[in-house]
Length: 230
Image 1 (cartoon, rainbow, N blue to C red):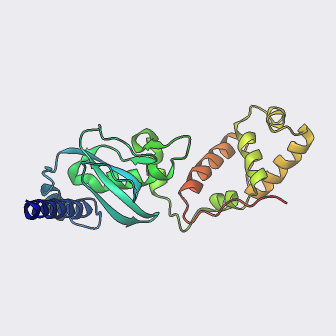
Image 2: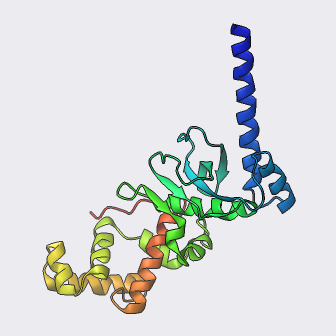
Image 3: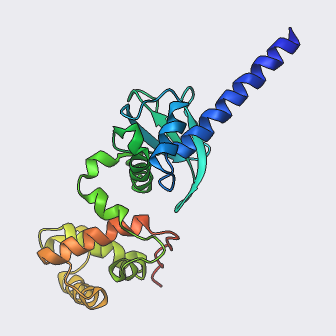
C-alpha cells in the first residue's frame, strides 16, 4: 500500500510538472503560435478556448489550477491559468484580460502590469478595467523611465504628498487647507514644483502628465523610495 501511494504521489508530481512546463511555453511570446497551441493542448485547451492569466507573487499558489513560476521584467512571479473566473484570489493579484488561448501571452503581460498596480487598499487589479491605459502601460520600459517619471522619483516625501493634493484639489487654497499649510506657503511650493517638474501640474495638460507619470512610477523597477525631507 505504501508503494502504491508513493507511485501515485510521483505520478501527480509529474503531471503537475508537465502542466507547469506546458503553461510556461503557452504564455511565452517568444515562442511560435504552433509551439504555444501544442503546449496548451497538453492542458486540454483548444486555440479558441477563453482563458485569462493571473499574476501573483511566486509563493502564492492557487490550489487546483495549472501554474508556473517564471522570471519577468519585475522579478520572479507565478502565472496561474484561469478558465472559469471562479478561482480564489490569494492576496495581491493581477488579472489579465480574457483572451483566446492562442493569445495567452497578451493576457499574461496584462496580468503582470495589473499586479504592479495593486497595493494594500487595492489588492486586486483587473487589466480589463484599465481600458486603453493598458496599452500605454505595457509600452513602458521600467529600466529606462521617462523624464516625467524620474522627476517624481526625485521628489522628497513631503513634496510628493503636496503635489498629489495640488493635483486633486479644486484650488490651491483648498489644497492648503487639506495639507494644513498657509495658502502663500503652498503657493510657493506650487511654483517650485512647477520648476522641478517642467510643467504646471494644475493645468489640464499638467494633470494628465502627472497622472500618467504617477502610474508609470509604480511600474518602474527598480523603484527608488522617495527621499525624506530634512
